Length: 154
Image (cartoon, rainbow, N blue to C red):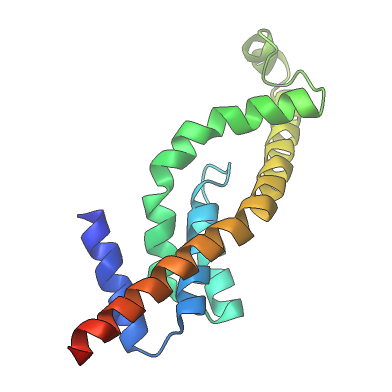
């Protein structure tokens, strides 16, 4: 079902005059924002980026929502890896819950720092994967357009 919706959205974007490059960029950014280690906010970020770079909002949101299960799966690994890379014991501290009852602001400060570290790791991972994913999607889209053109000429 999601695949059919995605194909329909890509076809509509192409019929509306969106280039394969913009379609691939919309899908790539939507997918990467879909795995951002934030509890909420990726949809708003998609809206802003779509507006700023003149990308397809439906494709951004569809890719964002498609990646949501992956966000859930990657949430803990982002935090754990960032915790390890930045040598902070925020999430691995078993006394964190007990400390929350004594000093909630201090615990929230530590969790904010852990979230910031996970976001930094996500930015690094996205910077590496964005050009790769973009090229893969662009190749697939151009190949599909070429195949569709051959079919209509036959």
